[in-house]
Image (cartoon, rainbow over all chains, first blue to last red; front, top):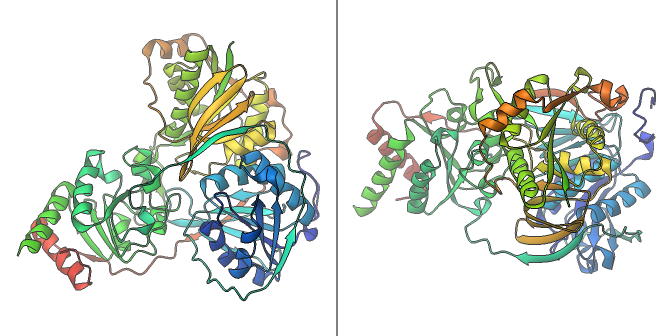
Length: 345
Length: 267
């Protein structure tokens, strides 16, 4: 590798020393996070293509009963640290512990779930290693010659997918939102090596004072069967009241596009799309949503897609099963009335 | 007790008014106004609240083209004391690592700072990388998704919200806080403050002449990631049936018929 012209802040690396595909598997709440296990799916594909080991990496305290799980879902090996100093999560302590393991084993690729804590700690890990990182990838490929990970994500607003590489640096890091990949099947007969590592966990500079579980009452959108979703075309938060009426009538829940979230009309937990959630509803009604690639990504697993939009040119119509060109202020009440009438017949 | 608070903001295209060209599938950029990233306004609001409660100064910093001056005037209009525009052609093309490097080198010039405040993510790229990366360059403790902050004797006590938990942490100063989206109501601009921005030169321009950063560490050259190419999104096959007609009542009848045919139990 040429080292000419490298930033003096970056440590020199020999790319060929870096081998293996790591999945960082979260155990923060005393259980293995399913979003992490889903990454064994693309991880297996990548590892097979470049003939590398697929390794699950776990950090925590009292996690020994969990460490076989990544093997059951497809990992060849698990490296874990079980230490009382990891009993409470703080981003810096977890990141520094993971960095110690990375420096020792030199994996070429690290994938992590884009949970709130993953999104908090993984960019720090990447930066300390002066490594390339991408967020919210929706797919991966790998160049078998250079062993470059091809990180695929839709850039903002566009209907194109960007292919991103970090050709000069190792490891290559990516975060992936939950439910982008399907969970591989669990096979408890699978065997693999378990490696317990001892790491000098750095003392925490920040202190967890309390951590309280909060009840989430509404049906999360990723589990809903019917979703009525609103976008910028609603024009105001009041528009969502109308969508709620329709959702309630058909036994569904309300969700929204990125633009509706940025406008403050609906909370981020209910955002559909690449930077929000992927949904699997059997019926998805998109109201006032133009249909940017980032949004369409979130509904690729949805059953029937209905579009209501007053712009006949909106890309959503090309990506829906049934479309009505109309002002939603007329169409949604008319739809509510039609459904109500048919039920009373 | 007086806090030196620094808030970082990004100048972004206003995605609320961006449209996609249905023919080419690309962004229509012409005439799109830029704005301060709305989630950064939550950071500005929190910084100003801290100043009001505990005393001190708030300095805003942004790495952006010179047009971002208008955004910084807006923030001074909210009550920020001083703003720094980090701008130079050599910073262009930076990925999140190079951006956070440049930003952290600029922030180092504001030492001794007590609390750095960042927005959760931007509306144009939403990586949420820059807070954690800046903390890593500066080697200071940090925490994301902050909703409430108290300060006492060098200790910053924050409340933050995760998927299913509410947590309270204590951080020493200096530290970096990433404010949760929509966690407060950003105040409106006061004309008198905004006039002050015009009159008193509250906005400083820092180029790489001031920062003196090595070219290999900034811009495209300081960025490990490369956008290689963009390809069309593979689309999911859909039926693409559009109701042909103007009457909304007929349209919804057609739609309900179709949904019933699909076996959906909505009526």
